[in-house]
Length: 382
Image 1 (cartoon, helix red, strand yellow):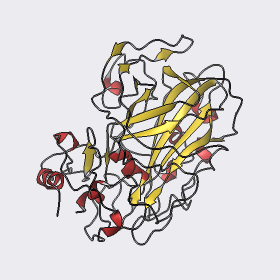
Image 2: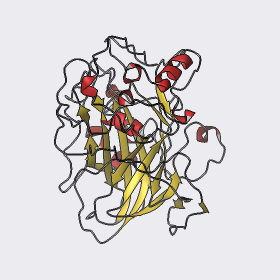
Image 3: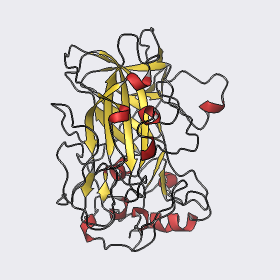
Image 4: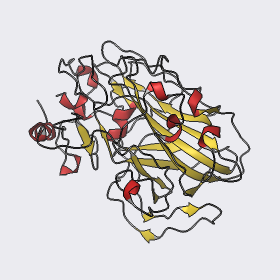
């Protein structure tokens, strides 16, 4: 029986027009929140604030298609421009990347890279010269239902955010963190995958000596890679995460939300790292939940996922107390069910997605692509 939240989402369908996709609006470092590039406002400001997130012209919150994998757009999103500041983080620390929203229908992997910018810093580096090495990846979590549960689903369940650990042995220096979701709801079609690369400037401190060899972003993927040209519909027991192999020593970490207790200011190029500017309890972050599961393993996941893994929204059996997790469907253009605001903690009575029957509802149509398959969006499950 549908939960109250699902009933509410259905009632809102067709009545609320929302933007279809999302962007990483900032990240939390040791309890301090640093704003990223706000693509909904910064492009229209004469003097936008100095932030740690790279700029982009993707005001439609759109994506980079496979036919642009060899262009500079794949580095840090469309027409990506250097962030003018950076955040300082110690090697071995965990970062929490906060998204503004993400559509439940846009299932796929979450992948994280670093690239060393050199002594001059990331504020002026030529983006196509950056060589990225993979520090984390997560793909299929549970393939027992159709479509399965992917890392993007867990990102939604963890308050629309993703935890990343900076390698403890990484050499100190200036780095670009490249955080990416690849949406596969149209991945079974040629040029159908959707990449959403998000970049942040970091100054990593420590005494490590590891300097992994990377590859240019324009060489990370090809349009015909098994994990790019991939249908999430039908029987799926494993998913080949695209891109280069994980660096040596990379390990899985437990996904959870992270609360910010202060707001930090980006440090401009050549400047010293500054203290947090204000104590500000994060309204968009929540305490880690015990239901969060580790998904960043290097090994390819299989369908034998444990039922205690981070559950999907379809597995929740009680309605959230707050309306901040209300979901809505766009009435025109991108017609997608979104999860916005703060995601509720997973219900302790969650059941395995393996018990959910396959659906036959047609997938929503995404703005720049017409789906040619008949998916069953997670948002329409019981």
